[in-house]
Length: 183
Image (cartoon, rainbow, N blue to C red):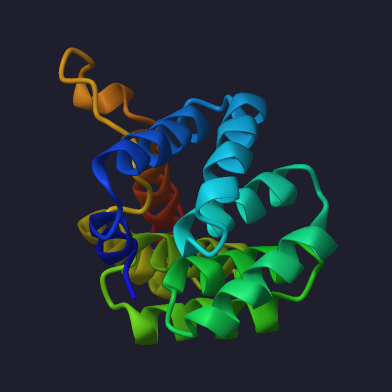
């Protein structure tokens, strides 16, 4: 089930508290987000998206066992929760198992074709492997679907958006490689 469906089942007060946790994580304020998530999970202990955010915090702390435990708990509850599959893939990648990571990212895409982060992560792995055509294919899909959920600042020029700069860098690199291969 998608995160939006879970969020729509919350009462307004809990929805605001959860959204505040998400915004704190997006701003990199993980300690404060973790405290609010703990508070939220006391009242809603089985809320899958909050458990997933808690797992992400553990991933940032490099506490992979705790993160995997939470993610497996989520997948027992909802085997089609793409963010949990993607986060398990990220752990596998961190631990050096790119093959397993790709399998998990592809499974996440299979259960939710619109989940951008799985496409993004697959694109990154293909880039690291030197498979630039596959990398670009998946990164384009990620961009189309939204590879992450931050709020764009309308006052900030588009070319200062880090995602835009990455794509520009990738295109320039690809053109350079093609130029050297063809000459």
